[in-house]
Image (cartoon, rainbow, N blue to C red; front, side, top):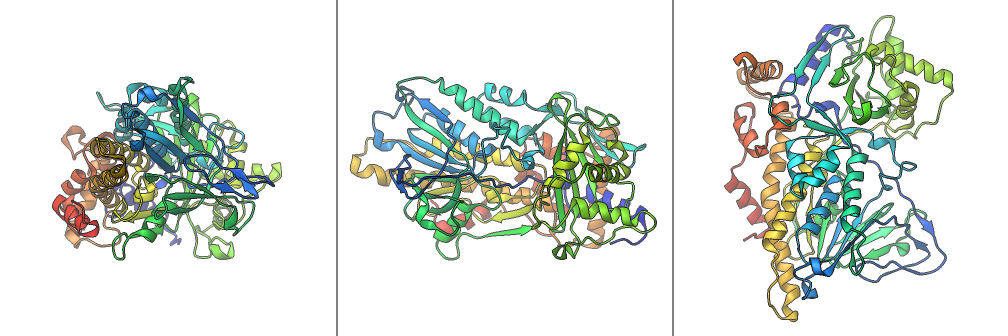
Length: 601
């Protein structure tokens, strides 16, 4: 990788940062920030048959799933349709991340007739600090889109979440320890983004769900979160969700069948099981998706007790290494109570399967640089590290601070190094689906967030767009699910038709936005503009990134626009048509394609 030209490598990095010809930058995390996918399952053994409870009574044998439950008691008097229980909805949500929990908030607030909401999450309760994974350490950026989606519940919910984050709109690019450029600053009259750990965001959503129950008596148990629940299968023919025990591999006899559900929603990330079910149960040549690893990029994250003392405590910072050809960057975000989230992003070598990392620098520091890359980014399939001797921690700490001097003196640096060594190397995914809902022949099903349109953190809008998906799906349910005076014999067919109309309407609204975000994240995705258009696009984006409309030069950069504008992604994509090889489809084109796939009326 090294050509002995550090200056040219720096220029290449700047072009990657500033131009749409390679990748776009959304939230300051840009292409160096990726959401993490972690799985941590806990089960408990039982030698007897146990009733799983829940929506439908199904039996688990030999193994019983250990559930952590968060329950809301919603009084029947709060539900205006409760007098006709045949209309009450049974909803299964896979994934208790931000989008899944916000969807629960919206459903409970909506006054829709609800019999049960079950949420299944493979990881432990984020509020349980003894089990929280380091992999959730990266701070998400909630911009105008995420704020608006949360505020669609009420201002109280947003206030509770905002208290756990840190408002920040400043962004500095540090070329070295002495020279940096301010790329973004707080705008007058513009509400800043809130940087918040995923654990804190989910914890606030859960706490608010708990608090809003009021602990009131006389109500039915409507809402439960099942933590440490590994989903084995989602059956859209029987409307059942199968939860398996990890204690016995390849033993489907011990799965706990939950359901049946009227509506199933997948908020379960880039490796979505619900999306796989959509593919399985959709008619041939209808539902399709592409998923790819964003190789050779890789990353690790860690929490620091305090911001590095040599950095601006109120600004996000992107740190370039002293050896510019190293291929590793450090991204530092201030967080609540003066802490910091630090993300190290690098590249896997071509020899990672042999467990080696090729040298990326020449000269006296070549061996040191090689060691740092090998230490931080071993092959992704290698086992998680164990705590090395203190002397090794000090050596690795020195390797890091030699390349990133601004991290020198960071409180808790030794612990941060240990966090990095204890993690597997992570690689992000991209996902693009042609439709986000089921056809009318199977259980009404929808997918949200990374399950439908993952961009691997390139745009910095993953969490924001996932929250918007949940709000959009809720709006469609409220609009189309209307109970009537149908006889009991026809209620089930009417429910099914209304729910399919709801998820189809959601797909009509969300698919164009997801495709536009994909384009804004990956640009031409390997395709090349004609030479003169490409040069013009590079220069235009560079001017926008550096000046952002100041002094009448350029206009607001794409990264600032995505973070601070409420304009639909579709509109932003179409306004940037000149930067793309292919034209973006019209609304009529999208609708026609979706109608052709699933005969949507």
